[in-house]
Image (cartoon, rainbow, N blue to C red; front, side):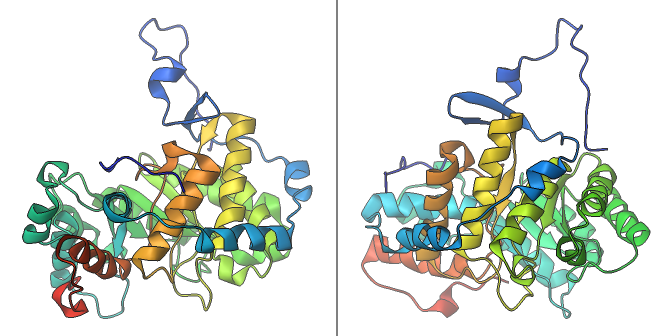
Length: 352
């Protein structure tokens, strides 16, 4: 794997092209792929031929995914740099039935200062001001998180649309999104109706996601496919394509509540759908694996996948996230070993 630098680094819109002050495509680009400047996703009309023609070579996907876990890994300062990048792309999450305002405030404090002050000083990274990308909570805690994160630049994400099943009436799910945006959420993580995928009701799935996108207004839409429930990689690829066309800002693997959550083969299928969509449309869409990612080594595997499949533009929180709160403690332990030569106990790195 190539080394990165040591510092972390309706679904349609129209533009007034007659204005002399209108920014150029290069000025508004959020990513680049194969030398092309890519714009935020505005969505495109549903193309059923595109969806129906999706094919996935499962054995080839498995072989490619396996290569990410067996290749020679980065070491020393470069490994530390990758781990710091992983922190900056992390969504710290609490989605428990016993959540409280105090727990959310503690999680927000951890997001602001994910590494202990002594470790930051030992690494010499004070100027980087490392922090997580977002704090993800239920709607009822959006305002608590917003107040706790004020001035930090960390985004507030709310799970919505009948999370995790996504089976409440559509009107209720849309209204749930609007309430969270009004409360101050910067991002909305929505759940699709998986039955639409099984029944190949692509227009219904497209319309559902487009309605979610419209309800989000200025907030970013992160579409959870529930890949552990979708059974086949072809279903994952098709659902990804529909979500992209409907205007998703991110596509996300899982709620974290399924028996099987984020896996590298699924990630490979979803990132290649993003790449193909970017080539066809000129729009960049982010990716978020969530669930089952617990170790520092896994974070490097996922970052490697992003770099190999989509390029350096996706190695930033605008286009890549981890839904992996439990991984932070292991990253802290690895960074402490990097500075001291010793591993610390997990209890020294509490989340909240």
